Image (cartoon, rainbow, N blue to C red):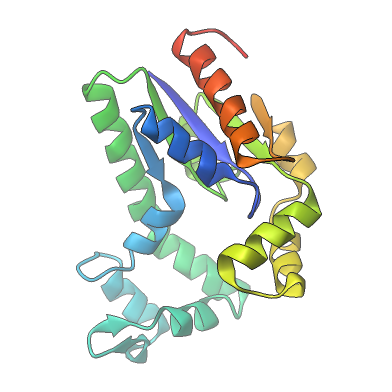
Length: 200
């Protein structure tokens, strides 16, 4: 089974590619969604987060995610601590999904993650697919999706890994510079090649 990492900067359209692959029956793990899930009630991460960032990050038994983010990202040490607490559980869940896909006999397993490059799970990927989009198009997509200003969207992009650094790691590149249909057509062609075992 091949494990394909799907990554790209915010607003690039990688979720469109992942949704297409999933619609074709390919098991896909959304690492960003799993990162949110590990903060849900019942997660083993909650007790260590409380110990590290204070009992008041919980209100009525519910995690105040914004307060946690404010405290965790205010210092490099806080960010490191948050990663140390949550990352092993995120990786465990992704690896469990990978194992399930392998046991089910799937020829391909995909991991969708904005910060896949440089993470522990990058080493578990056989190939990396990078989805790219022009900066101004990405900004417009982020604004429409998240309801934020162009300035905030641009700031978010500037905080992420630079596109050239992502492209250095890419085995496959899909350029999302026109329509969703055009991107889907590229994804379809790539998936057909992957399923045939042909190098793109």
